[in-house]
Length: 496
Image (cartoon, rainbow, N blue to C red; front, side):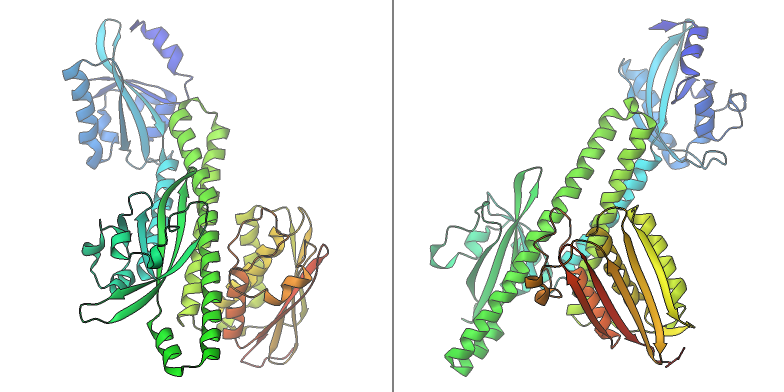
């Protein structure tokens, strides 16, 4: 289409996007927002300069190729490009998305560049990549064998090293193989891939070339995406040692106890897998929805709605990252790789900083009140373990309390060699019948409603407390609130 110069300037000068007119690669016009993105003091400073002077050297060829494509193919639809801008002192931005097309202005053929800042998108992508790396590390380092199987074709999509060792085949030998042919169900069980059954458990036997039989326990659950069953997650447990012990003892009572113990372990594992599958589903779906909206309607969104979209994505990423961190801590504790490493610590300042951090991250309306009883100097405590203890107790108190209520963190140091941390809330409380199993992994109260979580936070608290050589106790009444009391020794024996 053809416009007059004055009409063109009137339209674009008020635009919230960068608008540039190029003659070849030379800037002949740029609006105020465009100059801002390029880091120029004003629009005049960029005129008659090459647009490439403002583009990162590694991305200049991308822009050249886009201009050449328009010139050679004479296409009318815009060409979409993503390039990084050189650091700009005024704007502090680095990445823009460009739509480039040919236009005729006052009878002259020129290039029109319309751009928007996508730096926030790149930050989100980096955060998602970090989560993927953490998940890949957990998958590879898991002490349990894991297979990812397509639930329709039964083909193995991925496996970790432990799974290959248990089955006796390399990673390459397992990929693409039919899981049902590799490990056929004993007794002709056909319920392996029943999506209505959240977790399926069975036992199979592996026969090595030398005739040795290895019994394996399998648990099969499902990872769900957008409401459709995508893959089956198969976890493998080597039962050889347990079966050998039961066989050697030849005592029916011992076999029954072993079987009961195994059932308990599998129930915990199954519950964990079901919870993780459920807890990943909602935030991933929320992230996908937000990304789709931003990609498809970014230009039509108000700035406040874009910011809300990015805030939603960051919040869900933070929730997933916190959950993966908790799982990593549990794996370290169960494998004996969680250690007590005390340093001299200003406990009061530590607690206040933690409270401020929780307020920033959770954006809660709850008041976390810090009270100290006694005198406090530097104490010999492990800051990492102490953080696990207090962060889990405080965030639980917030999650399970009505909005805008008070949560109390009380520090008491009146006995030589001992400091007591007391966390009190006025929330939903813990049902009396469930208090006995409160510190059991993956256990959650029946009255939590829709509150998210996988039930390992209090197990982490218990482990961190006992690594300190301390004690933990609680009192709770359903509907009225809960008080946790953690007593930790101060190895310096400092008295008030």
